[in-house]
Length: 539
Image 1 (tube, one colour):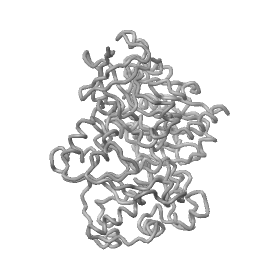
Image 2 (tube, one colour; image 1 turned 180 degrees about the horizontal axis):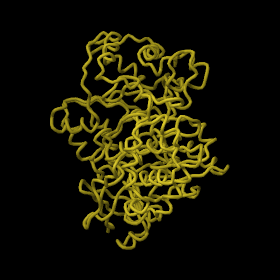
Image 3 (spheres, rainbow, N blue to C red; image 1 turned 120 degrees about the vertical axis):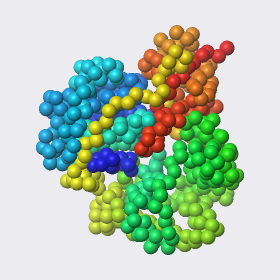
Image 4 (tube, rainbow, N blue to C red; image 1 turned 135 degrees about the vertical axis):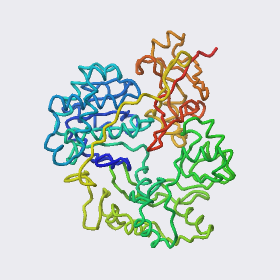
C-alpha cells in the first residue's frame, strides 16, 4: 500500500481517542463499536447526543443504529461498492477537497475513472442500499469538516479486506479528512496490545517499527545489534503455517497467547494441522483449547503479575506495573523467551524490562523517544516519537504523508467467495458480543459475564425463522460445507433476512467449524464475515 493506506499495514489509528469528543461526524463501517470497543462506543454516543452526526454502515441493527442519522444496511461483502458509490457522488457533485487532492495526493485520475462506474443506482443493485441514501451519506461526510472514519474487523475480515481498507483511505484523502484533529481513518484494534505486538515485529515481513526484512540496510542494523546473521525471506502467516503443518512441511509451532483451535477458520482443518506437528508449545495464562493439544505448556503471567508496556489502538505506549507476584510457576513472557533462547544457544542477557525498552529505543525509530523514564512521568506517549524531546504524535500526516504524496489506490468490487445457493441458502456472519471476548479464554471464567451470556446462540430473522419452522430458544443445527454446530435460536430483526449471526466465544458451538478459510491475498486475513450455511430445527 502507499500513502495513507500504508498506515494500515500497522493497523494504526491516524487520530486519537480524545478526538472523538470533538468530532462532528462519524462514518462507522464494519465496527460494532459498543460491543467490541465499548469505551470508544460511548464516546461516539455522547458526541452524537451533543450534536455530532453518525453514518452507520452495518447489515445488523447494532446498538449504535438508533443514534445514526443514516443507517446503511448494505449486503455483506459489498463495502468496496458502497465506498466507491459514495466517492462517485462526491466527485460528480464537486464536493471533494480540490486543494488537498492537488497538493497532497497523486493518482486522482485513476480513482475517478474507476468510481465513475459506481453510480448510486449501480451501487444500489449491488449493495441493497437505496441510491438516495448513498447520495445523502456522501454529501454529509464530504461537507462536514471534522469527520472521522471508524472501522474494525467487519472491514478487514474479508477476502477483499485490503481493498476495503484502501477504499476507506481513498475516501478520507478525497475529502481532505486526514492530517487534522478529529478526522482520519481509525481502525479499532481488537486486543489490548495487538498494536504493540505488530509494532515490535510480530508480523512475517518486518522487524520492529515496520522495518522490512527484505531491506539490506535494515537487516545489517539488527545483525550488528544482535550479533547474528538474519534471513531476508518473508516468513509465514498463520494461514500459511496451518497449510504447511498439514502437509508435513512445518514440524514445530510455538504459540503465545493465541487460541487457533477456536479463532481460526475451518477448525477441523486447524485440528488436523496441529495434530500433524512433531512438537507443539503453547505459552498462555490458561489451558485453552489449543493448549490442551500441546506437548509442552509454558505458564505465562497475566497482566497483573508483570511490569511492561502496552501500545493501544491510538498508538499510545503506556507503562503497566504489576499488582502481585506471579502465581504458581507462571513467569513473565519475556523471562520465558529469554530462558528458551538461552537453552537454545543464544543468550539474551536482559536484567529487566527497561533494558529491553532501551534496545527498542535504539533500533526502532518511531519508538526512539519512548523511554521508561518518560513513561513514568506521563500517561503514555504516542508514536512516532523519534527522540526524547519529542512530545509524541496525536494525529498522523499533519503536513505530509510518510512517502510524500498520498497515492489513491482505486479498487473494483469483488463479491464474496462463497454465496448462498439452493442447498446452503443463508449467509453466516460472525462477531463478538458485549459480555464476552474472543475465544472466551478469560471472560468465560468470570461468573457475572457467564450469567449474562451463558450459551451460544444464532441470530436469525423472523421471516427466515417462520419459513424454517424455528421459534425463540429452539435448538438448531447450523451446517456449512465444512462442519456443523448446534446452538439456541435467537429470533430477531437485528439481522436482515437471509443472514444469520453467531459469535466465536463458545467452545460448545465453535462457530469457526463453519467459516470459510479463504483469505485476503495481501494481508492473509480469512473471510470470517461471510459464508453459506443451512439451518434446521433439532427435534
